[in-house]
Image (cartoon, rainbow over all chains, first blue to last red; front, side, top):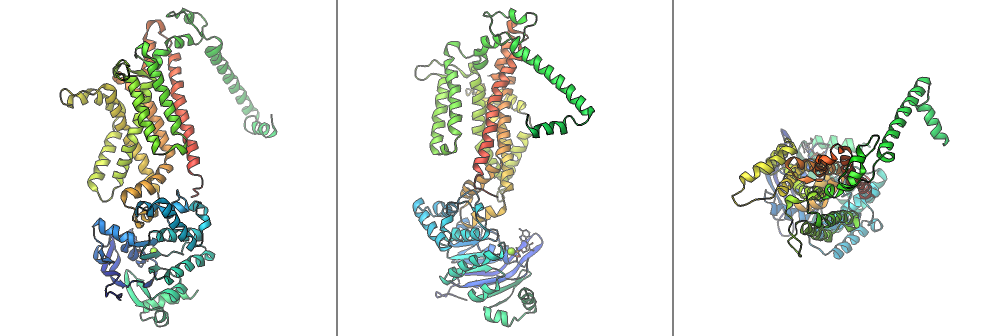
Amino acid sequence: MTDANGADFITLERVSKRFGTFQALREVSLSVARGERIVICGPSGSGKSTLIRCINRLEEHDAGRIVVDGHELTRDLKEIEAVRREVGMVFQQFNLFPHLTVLENCTLAPIWVRRMPRREAEDLAMRYLERVRIPEQARKYPGQLSGGQQQRVAIARSLCMSPRIMLFDEPTSALDPEMVKEVLDVMVELAAEGMTMLVVTHEMGFARTVADRVVFMDAGEIVETAPPEPFFANPRSERLRQFLAQILRH
Amino acid sequence: MTGPALSWLRANLFNGWVNSAVTLALLYILAGLAIDIAGWAVADAVWSLPAGDSAACRAEGAGACWGFIAQTHRFLLFGTYPVAEQWRPALASALFVALYAVSAPRRFWRRELLVVWVVGLALIFGLMGGGVAGLTVVPASQWGGLPVTLILATIGIAGAFPLAVLLALGRQAKGLPAIRTLCVIYIELIRGVPLISLLFMASVMLPLFLPAGLTIDKLMRAQIAIVLFAAAYLAEVIRGGLQSLPKGQYEAADALGLGYWRKMGLVILPQALRLVIPPLVNTFIGLFKDTSLVLIIGIYDLLNAAKTTVVDPVWLGFGVEAYLTVAAIFFVFCFAMSRYSQRLEVDLNQGVRR
Ligand SMILES: Nc1ncnc2c1ncn2[C@@H]1O[C@H](COP(=O)(O)OP(=O)(O)O)[C@@H](O)[C@H]1O
Ligand SMILES: [Mg+2]
């Protein structure tokens, strides 16, 4: 899929990744257009995390090409930095910095990477904390917040760097059920504003309402890619049928 | 005595006649010891003596000879520093204590504190060495006692700490095998050698390798040896802290694009160092006491000064008093460090629930 300029926003071409002798990704190809929302699902260990972590170089791919908004990911540190400035990431375990307050978590990168004056960075952070609906927690430490609140802070922290792409790696999997919705709501809003998003999740409701395309991975391969409607209604492969049967049974 | 205390006593010390008998016997022995020590240290002690005359201390039944400490305390504290100038090392020691005191509260931990330290150390070395502001020159070979101990320990810690951070980071650097190997070799080599042999090397071998004409005084050489030695141990302590942080902290910092030095300086080290405050301070305390090993190469630190006073024929045999005094001074500094670290740990972990 291509955007208005005729160029992909994110391109993965035959990307492979091994951990020792274990092949985590096998020649995966995927193109994402500007503003597109992709949901990635698949059984545990199928390489979903590895795939999106290759996009901001938390993992280094062994073969193939990854290009993010014109920056190809190679050993070149300048290019890696450029990509990381454009790509925000939200982790399953939040990974907030426990020694910093919520506000300091959010202003750290704008101040030190974007060289933004402190006051300006704090104003920006407060705006995003309001958007994720926890401005009143700004002076607290992450350890004093609930899981859902921490994950929303993590989203705000990423947004403070004004990323053009957001990666989510099972953002609701570590949350108690009653907190899942508050995080998904924030993500839905973000999608509505046109953010390019790659979301690894098993929240099929989210996939149905938000995704432009749903990607199914198994054993390090992309098995099937389709818009949510056909994806859930007419799975083509046997593997996806089985997977859907399993997760939709609950 | 309150009820719980009484029942604790009964349950633990007087349950059954064997235990009661053992308890009573031990109490008897302890009380006897306490009375003996108090008698020696206070009741029978000789507090003042005529100058240079130890006869009263040698009399039958005399206790601790504190009069000896009273007479030799200047040498004990300042070693061979010229007597007329001894206000200078006294002031230098006081400056050290003042520097420790202003560095303690967390609200003073700002960039200005670094300036305070640079100025403070400049004043201390100016006072000790002289040659400025009309002070007569006193070469380092004549420095001694408490200020020497404080210099060796303070500069030892201040110099070793940044070096240790770099070594620990180097040992963790995944992408740089050469640097990593260098750091491992350094740490293992230094840790494999006793400090005494490093001090010997610094005092005997180092001058052989220096170009002719260039000499570094003995104190400086010992100082360098102490810094290099302490850095290896501190590096391993810090590495422990680096390793105990969850991988997610590194990844979150990477994902934000912080870059290596900011990631380490703003996210990783502040957390890692907090985690290792107890072993860190343990190493500091060890280092503070280890500085006394410099007496091996003839530097007059506190311990060596004490040792020297006891060699004087007049005071022969009063080693216990001299060493107790030195031990008390060491204890005050080490205990203060220990208590401070406990408070700091509580302070720093406020609000940080893990
Ligand atoms: N750092 C690593 N070292 C070794 N194996 C890894 C590492 N990270 C992931 N793997 C393996 O790669 C496979 C894919 O992992 P991952 O991408 O996390 O799967 P998913 O997110 O789909 O559950 C798993 O079998 C996992 O054990
Ligand atoms: Mg995963």
